[in-house]
Length: 473
Ligand code: UDX
Image (cartoon, rainbow, N blue to C red; front, top):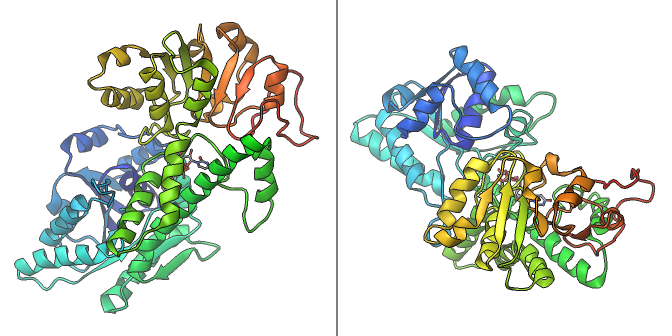
């Protein structure tokens, strides 16, 4: 099939690359000339494991092309995906200006029946607005060009996006119940056929339900995390261990083990934004989602939990302290710094006068950019933040190590070397990477999330090499 993807961001590029890889002729359109230039010259503007190789081989095979020319991208295409950004507006609602601009552009160029696919995360009712924007342009051209707008939300996790696209758990498609809608449904079936073998993964529904499904999924997951974080904080107070509790409740299939990890708060481009947008949708309909209100404020507080522990240990004035930070990205496998808890923690430490030395295996460039923006107008604080290229350099002479992201490289460090380099053997762990009892045996003062110091989190029969710690992830 011939397909166009509008928007060469994270979702657009992954979608384009994967669809080209199964033999489709895919054209990527973006209004950003610089981005297209980078892609045409073989670069990839984002970090996503495996993406570079797929883009390169499909470009070489002539199945994947990049353009800023809307005529080339939008005429004679069987399907056009809209995969542009929907940033949070000032009131938390999704800003649809890029989606609607893409829709108008489509209306200015389509010539034959085209399936327009809303891939961007958009509030309920957006497909109707997209349809109107296209229809307006088509009518102005005096054409009676048929098209159908479908909703096909993405469920791609950063760092695992290729896997999520090519082996989806479900493919949600919302279609209209009319003749063009039926035609669109057949097109979507053909397009996703390579990912729909062995078991039926396609879930067809009406357009509004498909739009809603995306927000419901992310809101549900965010709720689960905030609830675990709140339980973790209580577990600490009552002397229980959230890791043991996690296994205890996860073994109930109604609850399940996934997405039950307490930590220093969720971040990223989706959960915070989608939770806000769903709350705003409720608001527009005169309703309040009280649970999501709590999910959001629990998460904001959770990003401060490590700061509170540090202040409790070192006092409010941290001007004599140096802290080493491992991990800056909001999660491993990505260089994404959007709403990363590290931004909150580092800013709070700098605000209290500390010096901070930071390292991330992948996100250093993005992190420097993010902190430069966060600390704009605060040159003195910014001067106290530095970045090093080796994770062990972070701890040299530091008063404590703070773990913010659960990168593999942090899971089994050389603890003797760590101890030797730290000024004091203290670790604040926002991702529960290590075993509290083992840390105690190593003589490391260890603070984690929802576990009393010295707790035995692992099962009795787990193998724990002498003197070593056991990563729980
Ligand atoms: C998410 C959804 O999972 C994906 O389906 C959607 O399309 C986009 O948003 P992503 O933002 O890439 O994907 O990250 P995800 O792996 O879901 O993690 C989100 C946040 O939750 C991270 O900050 C992570 O650290 C945190 N998290 C996740 C926890 O704190 N505990 C967990 O158990 C799982």
